[in-house]
Image (cartoon, protein in one colour):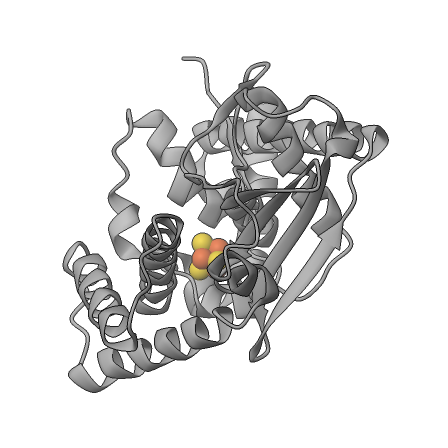
Length: 296
Ligand code: SF4
């Protein structure tokens, strides 16, 4: 069976942190025709981030139609969305924890609405802008790429592509490459220009108590480089798929204990209990596997 690899920043992040967790979350979907039993295991914190994202899109769509949300409406919508996300899982969250999650979400929203681009949109400074659907993918060669920005705003003949990260990882060297994937998406989506310099990229992410904005100017070279790295990721993911077919127990585990602490698969993964011991046992298993295959 041909394995179809799908690339997105979320998938990539998880893949780099723990190939096994990546396979359990995304690899199973490919092999079992879209059914992924592990999707229901997301942590409450992640569900809160999902609810925020859902509400952000709704609020931006309303803003586009000139509708403003009151703090009360925002609170109500967040509560409804979070409850809905939780109902889809097997979690039973205590009322106090649920309310604490809502407080976090409300606070982050209040801060987000002070960001420059949002204020400018509220002031109707730009007549041409779109709210885009992150789940809309494009096909590039044999790969399906999920790299849509959340907003596309036309400012003085340039398309400003904006992505919101509800929870941003610490700043890293590959941030620019990941942002460039938005240009790849736009060029393959249709309706956007083909020239890389017709874009400007912004990522707005929550990190250490604030929304941080990073801005990048893509070039032909940077987008080309992005495509190369993206292909490299997809090949590495394909390799893990093949590995998993041979023996699921041999899939590489997380690099750090920290990843396991927030992993939704920890209850059924040896790494979740003790990563160091699990890595050691895996090395022994691998040696046994190698010696068995060399005898056959
Ligand atoms: S518990 Fe740790 S090693 Fe196991 S899948 Fe999760 S992150 Fe990976």
